[in-house]
Every structure is written in C-alpha cells, then in structure tokens.
Image 1 (cartoon, rainbow, N blue to C red):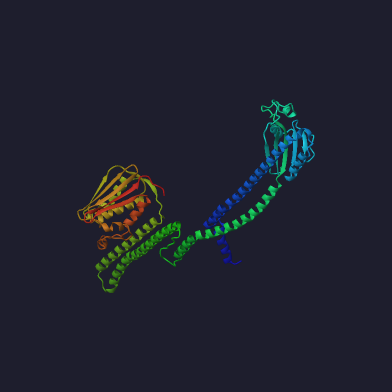
Image 2: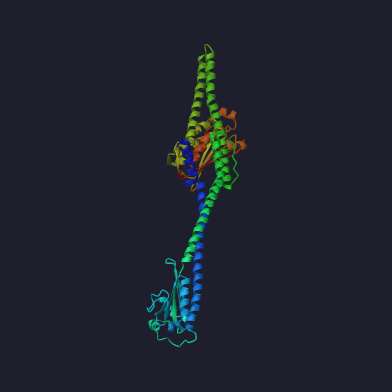
Length: 507
C-alpha cells in the first residue's frame, strides 16, 4: 500500500470515524436521532397491536361465554349435564378458539371438560374462588401463548338468600367477602393466542424491512449533512493553509455559517496584527541598522581623514581619537540597550524578586544623577509621601527610575527643575517624575515607547542616547505587572507616572 493511500485512509478515519472529528460527531448525532425514534416507534406499534388484539379477543370470548352461561342456566346443565346442544356449543367454542373450556359446579367439581381429562376433579384456585364472588377475571400469558379467563354462571331468577351450603361456601367461609348466592358455577376457559403471535411475527418482519430501509436513508442523510455542515470549516482550513504557505496574504471570507464567520473574523484580526508586527519588525531592523551604522560611518570618516593627510599634528590625532572613542562608546551603548530589550521581550531575563526599600533606592539613583543635572543647572527635588517597601527586581527597578529621571534631566531647559514623588496605598506604589522641560507634542505621545523613536531627532542627536530608554522602561514595568502613563504639554514639561504592585504577582 502506497504512502498516499495510507494518508487518505488516515484522513477518512479522522473525518468519519474519530470522535474528535466534527463531521463524525454530526454523523453520529443525526444517526442516533433518526434510528432511536424509529426503533422506539416499531416497538410501540408492535406492543400496542398485541395489547389491542388480546383485549379484542378477550372481549369477544367473554361475550360468547356470557351467552353460553345463560344457556347453561336455562337448560339446567349444572344438574342434568345431558343437553347435547350445550355440549356441542362448548366443543364448538373450544375448537373455534383452539382452547379449553371447563364447567365447574357449585361444589368446585369439574362437570364438563372439553379436553375430557379433568371431569369429576375438584379445582380450588384463586381465580375460581373470586369468580364465585362474582368477579370475572382474565390473564394473558404471553410466554406460553394463551389467555385464561373465568366467567361466573349466574342464576338471576332462582337466587336464594344467604350463603349456599356448598363446597365453595365452605372454602371461603372465613373470608371477609362472601360468595355471591346468584353464582351457581364457573366456566374456566383457556384460549390460544397463536394467531396473534403469527400476526406479530409477520408485522415484525415487515417492520424490520421498513426499518432497514429507514436506517439506510438515515445513514445517507447523516453522511450528506455531515459533509454539508463541515464544508465551510474545510474552506476556512484551506484559506488559512494558503495564508500559512505564503500563497496569499489577504483577509479571508467564509460567510456560510455564523460560527465560521466568527472564526474568520478572529483570524483576520490576527492576520492584521501579524502584518502590523511584521511592519514593526522591518522598521525595527531598519532603525537598528541605521543606528548601528551611524557610529561606524563617523569612525570611518574620521579614520579616512587622518589617513588622507600627511604629517598630521599630534593634537589633531588626539582630537580625532577622542571622537572615535566617543562613537565606540555610543555603539556599545546601543548594543547593550538592544540586548537588554531583547531579553525583556523574550522573557529570558527572569525577575529576581526581593523586598526592597524603594525610598532608599530612589535616594541612591538621584545621588548618581544629580551631577548630570548640575551640569545643566537643573534642580532635582525628591518628595517621599510615606515609606515604601515592595517586592521588585532591584536591577530592573533601577532601570525604570534611572531612565525616567535621566530623560527628565536631558530634555529639560536651563535653570529647570525635576520633581520625583514617591507614594503608595495598600496595593500599589507610585513613582512620579515631573519636569519643566521641552514637553512632548500630543500627536507623539502614543509613539514614545517605540524603539528608536525620537520626537526631535536633531535635538536628540545633540543630547545623545539610543532611543531605546522608554521602550526598556515600559518592558520592565510590564514585567512587574504595573503600568506607565504620561501627560505632557509642549514647551512646558512632562509627567511620567509609574504604578507597580507592592506584592509581586507571579505570571
């Protein structure tokens, strides 16, 4: 068997046999919903027919037995037993219904048995005793195929008061209910239900044929429905596979079902998100290439300038070498920031959580940055509303605070100020950095956390930096399950607010 044949068999198995397949489940549901009612209907019809047939046969025989009981009284058969007409009627009834009729007198003796085997014997049974009390009983024995019934022989004209001094009266004298004095005897009759069983067998065979045809039709319908209802999902799968294989990059549309439409909408949103990420990735690569290439280009220009000149003074060499070292430091800083950002994006750098005094950490960071502020004549003010102790990663928390305060100093005006406010409630602590700097245009606020994004590229080049500081800051904040927001007025200053849980929330 070829490999393609094996794959086709596996595909058919998953589509029609495996219960994990939607097509198989639809097929089974339709099959069960169609077959179970048909089987129940067949059983109900057969059972109803049997009950009706037994009921009709019982009523018919009871009516004839009641008529015969009147004849027995009129002919005084219980005492004489010589009427040929009555004997013929009893034999005819027995032959007609393929059964047996026994006539029992008041002393519980069998005076007539159409089978001729119980005459003269005494019968004491619950059915006979109840019949002497005036109750007509019938019992259907489906297993042995007969109906047994008892019919009282009642004399309405010559009834006597009190209990008859008979064997039946003696047997049930201790019973609460006394025998009916009008009942002179009982006819105990058993009739065959063979014709009912034969009719049921014929009906059962026809029902089986009809049921088989119905099952074949239901299987066909179930198969067709399972294919039709799952076809839109196959189209969705095919469209997604084409996108995955690269044959198409457009949004897909399968509006056949509401469910497929929801799936397609979700996939199209994912596709758009992927396109945005791809565009962002391409822009990021272009920015990285440009940022890494710029220092190299500067160093090459400086080196080429030195090589193009002869007898270059030592002072010029010194100046050019200082510029080259500065560009090398810039290149190194870009690479370091890129590595830090990549580690945060890929969650490679796990948080080293410890209980940290945020007030002391802030004081330490501001102590390191104040010399930079003094060079620009910027005043740095720290306001601690209350002592704060939190579960944070000290290194990444240092990155967050340092980047925000350093940016506030760099993008400030001469004789400006930077204010740092530390506060907390019962769940979070806040780190707020305000400045009197150049501010950020409103249309740029949504982009300031993008990698290498600069509001004013020419001014940023003079100040320095890699354009990755805020991207790193936001990643570190998100790793702590915190948030960062910014408000700014161009020309007046900006305010960054970082909110981080006091207790670390494991991801």
